[in-house]
Image (tube, rainbow, N blue to C red; front, side):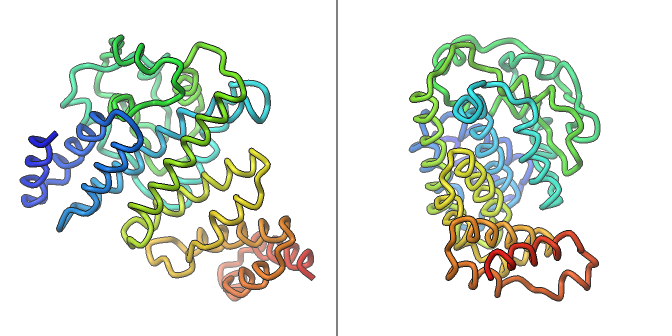
Length: 319
């Protein structure tokens, strides 16, 4: 690891974004647990003159792949079945539409060119998702048996799996039109998981995400998009677990109106979601504060009638 960190310094000084992206993925792939992963992400984020694009993509990659790892657990708790074909697509669609980012746009190819081994993930690599997932330049689908066995049944897709997943995963900012690719990713574990174990894994993801927010993401303007992404996904999980107060709290204190890197329509949607959660929790003080932060002139200026209607419906609930 020390050798990799020394190489990271060289790439950082040379401002080599592509090389840094591959190296960061290699570093996180060597982490054995959440604590170690947070530690190294923190080290990378605090480096002087750190390259922002590779850092953003690494954080996005790790977070989204860990979210995928609990998809079956979450659906087991909510519906009694681990299979939900549209769940992952829904929140990734929201993410891509909201931020207009080329998430992972060069990661898949760069990792593929620098990593000879990959693991078999169902039909990953078998089919390209038209309009959203780029062409996979590698045909290698050999299974990394040792890595798979050590993780099987743990409910945790480690950073090593994250590293390999990116070889086949190249998400762009367009609509996701096919869920097959993600269904296969979410069907990794064969054994049945009971509710207690599933809840433990979900809580582990929540704790990791909260730590990621507090120690790495919050307070950094170049990670505003990641802060919105993480809080929206956590909010969704809390609602599914019937924890509406936690859902409200996780997004209420995010000052999205001050975020310069977020599009205004995304800010409005985020603020309306805050207001909705305040209403369903009957927290009228927070309702008043949330409603005052919404720029009402936006609705007419952008002819956004749906958002305007939703706003006034919520305000009726407040009154």
